Image (tube, rainbow, N blue to C red; front, side, top):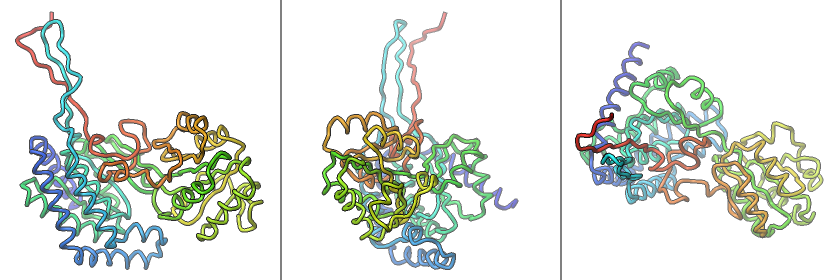
Length: 419
């Protein structure tokens, strides 16, 4: 334990030094590091996948769910996506150093704000090695140092990615401690991180409910929660059936193990019986297990009875709750009660309904005639994201470069004194 304490102390101390150094480093060097990392991911794909197979083997032995294994896998497609994200982040403009809200007081003082990095960001996450790259990229671009503590399921993948980042940082002349992987799978390492308020400025947990609650309850450092995604799609009686079926299937089936996948389908009772049955059948054809209320169960003998817990469930699998409502107001009421305030969508051709839905649904992303799967940093033009915040302060929804900055006041005078 004493060795681990010393290791965490050293890692955090080095990150603090790196964060201070990063504040005055030209963004061109940061971009160089990101592009170098993109190149390394391509040239070292074989090595990365070899290390990833060690994690996948352990995951299969632990009998993790197919959805969890999907999130853990560094496939060619996953690596290509990380490369694309790195290049897109490198191409983004940085707001660090931007000045705004300038004013000159009657006494001649010039006062304004300047955008600055937060400092050291600690990311605590589970079995998604792509988070290692995405989070590091966003932190670096916003000139923050980052400490990455992934789950034990991805330890070999994360350590391999961390070594590549060190090479990329070295090639660009950036401090090696700007991106560090916490190499221990010991849970006490997380507990130690959460007490290092002298070095770490922000903690972002990404993972299951138990992980996030543990961090929120024990951290001495400010936390931005990336809570579970209980996402809804409401199909109004005024919705286009072709759009509805396409969006519903995409939102649930394309990648069920991610936080922006739909977990509850809401059907309007005024939607014709035939159209509701068409939507249900499309889901059943895609091997989705359904849990519904009495009205939903009447649509198919294959729909199981839903319990109260199903409305709160984040399945992360090919399972889906189905709720029946009598209009947009009831749909909104259900969403605001059971949603995790992540992403919710309405399918309607009515501008009145869509306006009401957009105004009254209290979620980070609210959509009209679009799949919840679009709630993603890359789809929002951020290149990639550090996560999707379900908090309201200081960031909400997909977090990009600007969300990892704060500001400081600058006051320029010419000898003024306060009387």
